[in-house]
Image (cartoon, rainbow, N blue to C red; front, side, top):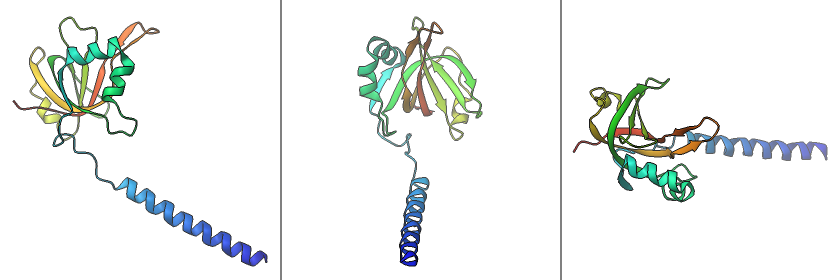
Amino acid sequence: MKKKLFKIASITALAGLIIGGGAMLYMFNMPHRDIQSAKVDYALTSTQIVSEYLSDKDAANEKYLAADGDSKILEVTGIVSKISEDFNNQKVVLLKGNNDKAGVNAVFTAETNTNASNLKVGETITVKGVIRSGASYDDDLELYENVILEKSDIVQN
């Protein structure tokens, strides 16, 4: 009886490992979403999206963000306010209107970094990327947090 129970438990555990491993491999090797070749969901200015988030964060989150990771693809036009690099050596370009409280941080990828290398502060550009978080005001720090666009690239007009 104990041998039969052990055999059933072993077969069940082995089947679970095989199914779990197969599911993990499938998820790990899934193709990534190609943001730059995908259709744009919204085209707007940096001032417009910041205003939407600061006036009604919940409505803006409902409109632009998705819990499953397939958030909206945006084309954002704005004035280059700052150019920096993050810890992964990816270019981060801040688009911000002259009187805006917050802006849009466009984070470029390793493949698109070179397209951002010739940018200059003060010029108006359009970037395409996927939104990851919206603008907000942090009461504790008493400062505004920017909208974050990931997988960004410059749109050639």
